[in-house]
Amino acid sequence: MFDVNTTVLIIEDSQTVRQSLRTMLSNVGITRSEGVSNASEARNRLRGKPYDVVLCDYNLGEGMDGQELLEAMRKGGTLPLSTIWIMITGERSYERVVAAAEMAPDDYVLKPFTSQMLLDRMSLARKRKLFLAPAHKLLEQGKVEQAIQALLQLSRDTQTAQYRLDAQRLAAELLVNEGRQAEALAIYKELLTLRIIPWAKMGVARIIAEQGETHESSGLLREIIAEAPRYTDAYDLLAQNLIDDGQYQTAATVLEKAVAISPRNFSRLKSCGTALLRCGDPAKAAEYLQRAVEVGRNNNFFGPDVLVDLLQACSESGQTQQLDRLQADIAARADELSGGELTLAVCRALGALGQQRPSDAQTLLQGAAARLRERDTDFSSAQRFLAAAVRLPPEQSNGLVEEWAKTIALRFADGRHELGTLLEVARHHPSCRTVIEDAYAALQHNSNRAVEMASAGELEAAGAMLYQLAEETLNERLAMNACAILLRQCEGKRKAGQDYAAEQDQVSRLLDWLPQDNERVRGFIKRRVQLDPMQE
Image (cartoon, rainbow, N blue to C red; front, side):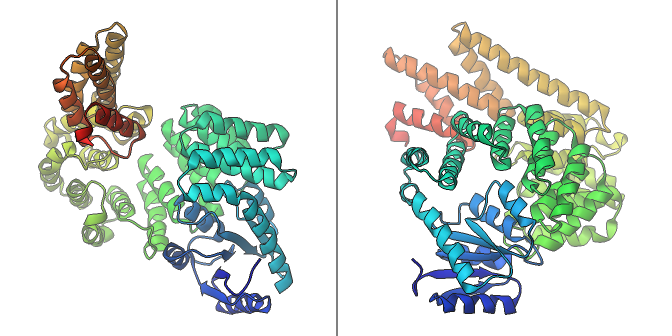
């Protein structure tokens, strides 16, 4: 089963232990082993080539722990399904962690252990992989539907409880990835009728949160945390639910508890700092964001957005000593920055505001405001722009802040999360809050009016109205609704032998700036190609 051709990656921060593990493997005939000392090195090595087995220590010192590394690799899709991942730990409490984990290793071994004990655990994990191999092969060929059906069949045929659980777990994950939440939900709920499984309950909580049932989802997540206090993913999703409901302070408290469990997790430190920044505690936010920078700076998942949040936190809390250095660091990584030139201008404005130069900040923001309508401007960069703008003194803004707030709200405030975020950013600027609320109400009214018109058979009027509004606001939801109606018109006119060139041109114009990675947009593109294959 394992021989001289078996490749093994050892992830362990102690060189002595790494060498000891290599010796153990050699004793059982496995000689092609390599070692790395931390999560960052491991990610680079695993991206470079596949390994048959990964032996990973749970505690890796600086940076991610072994469980966080495993989850990052699986979520990123860079760990082959055929790779066996064995976690090594001296903590008996890890048994509770692995029982709850949404993404668990194939097996784990508790220290101390012998070469034979390690080989036995690897062999058991190998048998589980072989059971799932038919589905793995289908997935490698891109045959997701066939893989799901194979997994469901395997779960019905096997008499081994663990194998059945493995098959159902992977099937549910694939169904969620395919957008088939109802089918995944049925699997998770079936599992929960048999026994309490925290990761299955987490699957339910994640799906119903996506469906907008955040209150029910949060209730399940609190149950999970009570059952498995170290299940940090549950804290993360609970915090996101709270943020969606506008409860930034409570979300920050939840994230602080998660950070206490995994104090060197870059993503969690960043999320906690950002939540504290949004709820008006920039000094505390700066502490967490500074820790995130220290933990993540030399890792390949580190990006400049955390530096922008740290700059904003320092600016708002009056910590001016870092502002110039942070701006230089951000400028050096401008090509990685979301929002591009707009975000760079906002950073300069934040620096000016922190150094008590509001007139300079106004000039910078005014010069960059036109970029709010550029294609690469995302919600994150727009809200940062607003966060700087609302700090301008009233006598200097001359109504500009309200005008900018309206532009941002009309483009981005098409859901309660976005609305809540913008209102939180403008919490100390009453006139801006009013503008944002009015813009959101106008978006809702126009969307509802278009639905009414379409239901009454007034497709042409509904499509024309939504197209005009989408082009004026660059609001993605309006644009997608416009595409849906315009394509219905095109398809109807084509069937009736009528000309539909004008509507087709409008669809093409909208698809030019809608996000191409959106599932709904991909569907529109396919329908457009069916109307005119030359546009493929």
